[in-house]
Image 1: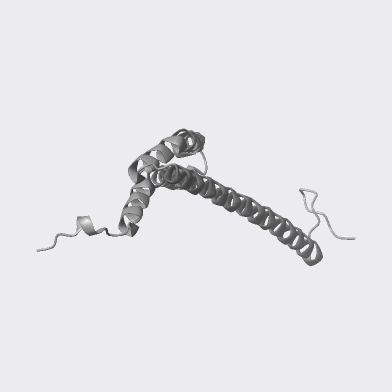
Image 2: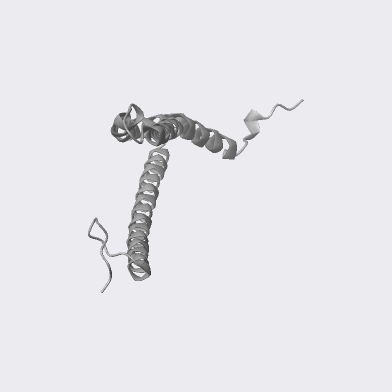
Amino acid sequence: MAALSESGKARGPAARRERAELELTSFDARSHDDERRLHRALRRGRAIRRRAHHLLRQLREEGRAVLDAVREGALTRLRPVLMTALVASLGFVPMAIATGSGAEVQRPLATVVIGGILSSTFLTLLLLPVLYAWAENKNKPVTSNTINTP
């Protein structure tokens, strides 16, 4: 029988090995859950991107100009993207202003996450529509009336 420590836990090499195996098993389960969460997030991201692309294609097929289609697509996505970013950012505010134990680790982490959320929101709402409009205009075929001939 293994000797018990003052805290009531078994001690000795066999008990340490058993505790280490339990820690490894629980770590593997967490990493598997994290993989599944990441996979779901990526699937959602692809679905959102597909819907946005479908909306832009549909607006273009209706005969709208590129800038009008991009503007309407960006305005359609404005509210959901802002609400998601706002909720996620506000969730990290307590970590960002923490002063208790562990705050020296929590504060920088929260600052980085909040900065990432805000920058991705900026990229999604402003830069991506501009890049899409630029790419569409660049792919537009050149017509004979736009070329200046001497």
